Amino acid sequence: MKNPPDPHPAPLERVVDADELDRSMRDVFDVVDPNVGLFGPDTISWELYSQKAVWFGAMRANLLQASHPGVAAALVNNSKADVGLRLQTTIAFVDGVVFGTVDQARELAMKLHRKHEAVSGMLDQGAGVYQQGDPYEGNDLEALLWVLMTIVDTAVLLYGELVRPLSREHKDQLIRELPRLAAMFGIPERALARDWAGHEAYMRMMYQGPRTAVGDQGRKAAASVVTPSELPLVFELFGQTVDLSWLPSGVATVARRVDPRRLMFLAVRDMTTGWLPPHLRDAYGLDWSPRTQRRARLLCAALRTAMRLQPDHMRRAEGYLEAYRRIGSS
Image (cartoon, rainbow, N blue to C red):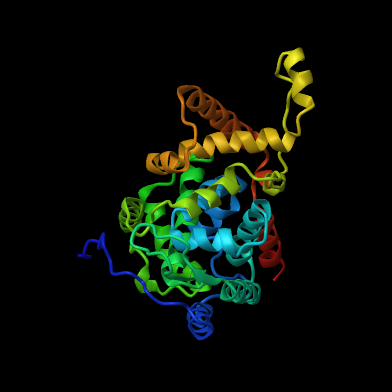
């Protein structure tokens, strides 16, 4: 019988170097088909990340990540990209690693690691267990683990909201597959949960702190996500259009003058607010009034219906479609 997951594991206080990343990748690449890649058609990971719907949660994942003081500092002090580009980069990385060949996954992982090597500094202020002046690194193992877990947690939540709920068995299988994806960050298997219950215990532990705590930099990072100076382009990746034909004619006329990207962005922001843990909604000062709650519920229901009415190939990520073409021709 397996031992229960430790809800308070020891901190992962080290930085992943290039040699560790290379060893992690080799351990995975040695046991997979180079052309199929890390996963394949028989995995839950392929099904989960093939759905464009899960990336409507990109804003949620970004806000969860910003609750870690080291990640927030990196976003505020070291990221020159706007929020739209950051979200697109995250989507492209996961899409490429999950559905690409071994060579493509290796190239993406090494590129991300090199990018993170340039990220370092000291915290401007303390938050949680972190003190002012504490160092942060882009390849800090604890921060990398948190970033990865926010992606996984959000993908499962959005799949359940917009596609269908995953069974406990499928969630457990997803966690068993996770070491392959984690290796692309240099995260060792020992740092991961053994099943979905362990993942939930990890998320509760992180939510409760003190390793996540929203300070001024966390709020600044969050503000760049929910009120960016320029609208992110990420939502254009989904190929969605805003159909205004159902609105009363006068309202539709006004609405057509508004940038459809802005309508989509505001809709996703409302839904994201509902998908966040309550303590983070409060920490970021996000509106969750009864009016916003009603609007978010209606928007989520409308999006769920719109996604389900699309043909299957329209709901799937391009990387997934390309992977099927590649495997079929081999």
